[in-house]
Amino acid sequence: MNILKRLRSVWHPDEYHGWGRTQRYFEGWYYKIVSPGGDLAMAFIPGIAMSEAGEQHAFVQVMDGTHCRADYHQFTAADFQPAADRFALNLGGNFFSAEKMRLDLPGVQGEINFHNTVPWPKMLGAPGIMGWYSFVPFMECNHGVVSMHHTLEGSLRLSMPGGGSRLVDFTGGKGYLEKDWGRSFPQAYVWMQSNHFDQHEQASLMASVAHIPWLNSHFVGFISGLWLEGRLFKFATYTGAKKYLEVGEDTATLIFKNPHTELRILARHGPGSALLFPITGDMTGKINESLQATLEVELLENGRRIFAATGRHAGLELAGEVQQVLAG
Image (cartoon, rainbow, N blue to C red; front, side):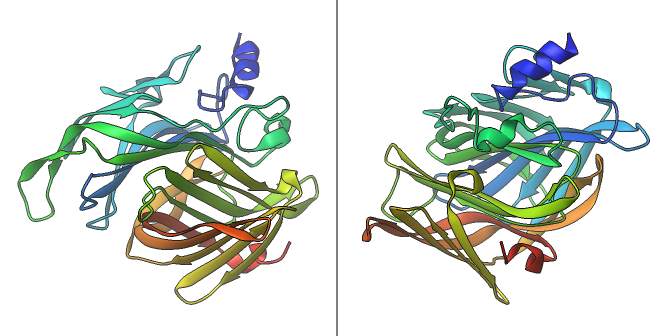
């Protein structure tokens, strides 16, 4: 039965993949929400972790990117209850899906619904953003994009840094939803995302470059998508695209090239929060993620600039020895 569930999940990257796993495994979903005025940006990460020794626990990480705070709420593995036929997760009184999240955590209570979601398109031989790599069984870390862009409806009651609480209405705000699963996060990677672009309501960008173990060697892999008014421009290792990456003291420059399109990104760091990430299934790694970064983005098609804007409330992570992903 677990084998059938795993086979199904290959074609449904948003769903749970860890059926029958007991060790050296993790899976988590990343919900980013930004209030309509942009005064509050948050991320919620529900997931499960299974260490090499077989110790298991579920969790929900909460990041307040505006006030640079992060909390890690731990649950028993038995509290982690995913559906077998769709993406729906009950976790200790909390609920997560592609359509909503309902939260009942210390300092966070409420429900947010998602409308007009933009899932990564499925194609023959490419069920998700990883293309044909989706079928490789020994990948260290797998990635999926559940929704590039959606609007929010609902409110959350949040504890404030100075004490007390307030009800924050996220109705009219924007959200983004992705996920990861496997053994470990890459030992070095760059990741960025924004769907708040000046004068462009229908635009969203995500880009990632990572050190990928492969058999007895490794390679530098990358995936990126710019969704623009209904069109998705893809740049990835498996599409034959080329990439250039340069990391400065407080910036990262990324250029992706396909035969007819070119994507240029200048990312600028912002204040961040410390999040935990998995190493061989154990949540022992730490990374600083900012939700206050900016992304200056330019897209060219056949040599003509068709998009130029600055993405705000951007997520940005530079993890490990990033020199390992500069070449390749």
